[in-house]
Image (cartoon, rainbow, N blue to C red; front, side, top):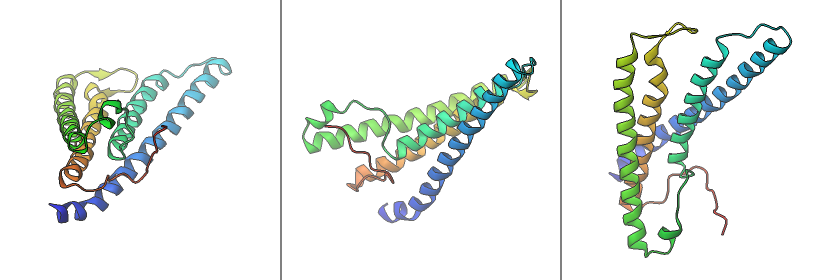
Length: 173
């Protein structure tokens, strides 16, 4: 198992970095679209109808891709005060349970998002002309990445390895 993790870790690191770059690009693009919307509304007196739904779609992508990267780098939100007061064996057990639940959550999010996408595919997003199911693509991809990155961390914790995070965030004491 350890050799398999060592073999796939560079691929997962590149996938995480790519997700982070796409997330950042989506944030910058959304900011430009909103800027154009404000300019067009107040200067040109002609608000583009496509700007809001496209901005919301981009926001879904950068939030969910960023959340997946946060899971891999262990910078997501958590309440650790109980964990830190427990013994190392209990801490490890808490980490295993928590990461297993995150894996299940990511898989469930992707599964049910696929069902939602399939159920709304026949509808059309009026302004963009896209099938309605496209709105659920970020949840499908984000859920799969969350599950994948949490599974990587779960394997590390189970094997007693160091955290996989590329970025170490120190908690304020």
